[in-house]
Image (cartoon, rainbow, N blue to C red; front, side, top):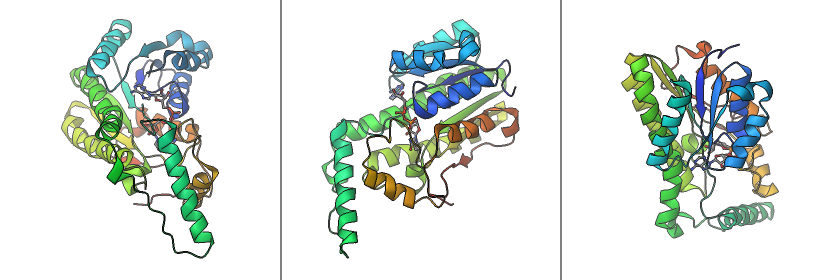
Length: 277
Ligand code: NAD
């Protein structure tokens, strides 16, 4: 087992990619603190661990709230006394609900229809010029501030200990940009800059910090997208298919285990070819 005796915290572990990472880590022998903002989803993840559920700890917290994150780390320290692996995965695809998704769906459908009719494509996204401060801010708070809040607390343990693994979930939206999602793309690109800076800072303490930038993965986050958007994204992917949460869990396991010991400040992008640096 690749993570025997290790203690891991996975944020947003109640669904999709986070759940797959929790299950992979538990299967490889780790004790997993499963965080989510939704307690019932944490319970489902822990139940799916089977026997390894006995080593799991549920920790409900909003990662955007620094005091809630501090309390979460106090709970983890009280239970396990240490932390070896942090996966900053918690995330949202939209802030203000289905309306934001519907708008993206409608624009994409109109653009495809215009293209199929021989063009020109005239329907504009019009997203950035009409975005509220609060929507932009909440997106950055969950993804970028959340990653910062958890990393800050984790380093208090890991730097003292002289070892640790931090894995930050970014996106191809952060490497190549995603139309109609300026807030999400900015947050995910910010995570990459943060990853590289902290990797340079804490390498001397034996802590590695890397990012994963998934392509289009089938989860609850992408489920509300219209078939047209899903087909556009699949067309944008040279392998011509979407990925599964397990594809990302495999990369997280690599970075968190001894196999990934010489990587830091890197971006691994399981994306079917969507983005090629
Ligand atoms: P998901 O919606 O299935 O899971 C996200 C989880 O994060 C949910 O359980 C949710 O409750 C939790 N969460 C949301 N806000 C939180 C907060 N403030 N504090 C704690 N938990 C919170 O989505 P997913 O697709 O599994 O996404 C996981 C990560 O992968 C996200 O960071 C997402 O941006 C990223 N990502 C997803 C895709 C994709 O195509 N699905 C692609 C690239 C990157």
